[in-house]
Image (cartoon, rainbow, N blue to C red; front, side, top):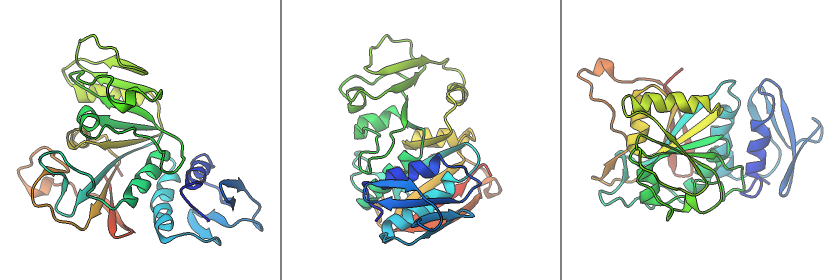
Length: 277
């Protein structure tokens, strides 16, 4: 049975397996082992999923979305946005708990577990005070990269008090002591381009950009995002904070029209846009 107790192990095994080979696994309660073909109850053959064990529709949908990403033979930067069907990620007062289905949090933690690093802006930390871990599925935690241009964060937030490492990028010269954090200062001119250059030097394979709207929009405008993933909830909010605020265009011929696919996840839709393919 695939559950929250072992799906992180499964994703980790797939993540570390050879991408061009078939993979056979034996699932035993909270452990997952490599298996012979005869004994396997979960396998990837030509990147298609076959399983003989009991698996819920939710986890099957999760694996159908994430395994093709895991099996790609290149570095990927994935931006993930949870939003209403009319493109809102929060109310104007900042409230966003919860636009998406509660199970979407489990899915998000699965997405974190296949990522080597996670990027968020300082406003996301201030608004949500997240841990940015995989605690819902017992998966591998990504490294945390925080963009804080004015160095406005302080040690009251959770990410500075759990012992996990943070990397903070800023253009400020302020002297601030942040727990378990390395502060990297960049020049204000061309800050986003310099930021991308520095993140590339860290040599993480899969990177997840989780928010907020400004951070994701700037990285899209700078052509850094490979896959833009929308988790769309069937609700109408009508006003609030937009999911994206890209540079204005003067003609629809300049609109981004990428390759894409759709997946169902419970009562929501996952839309993947392949921006750099």
